[in-house]
Image (cartoon, rainbow, N blue to C red):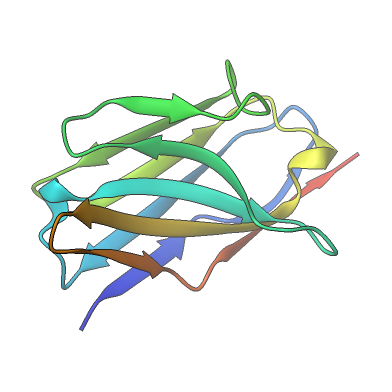
Length: 119
């Protein structure tokens, strides 16, 4: 059974920081690209950041310079450090695990954690 469990969300003031965590189980962690996505009310889910099995990172423009994705392969943990938060960062943040191979692909989602940034 695959599980992705997010934690670390909460209510912060504009300019504050949060560190989100995602604990993965049931996957061969090092061969997956891990990612953080977010979804605000009435909006579609959008990519925030990804990190490949080899550690290559990619960021959406919205978080560049403010957000940092990292991981701990031994602990199967993915982090999203968010600094200088803005009200427009308010959303449910989801952890994602994705694998693409010749034999097929797998894509998994966590349940989400709420981030609210007050103005």
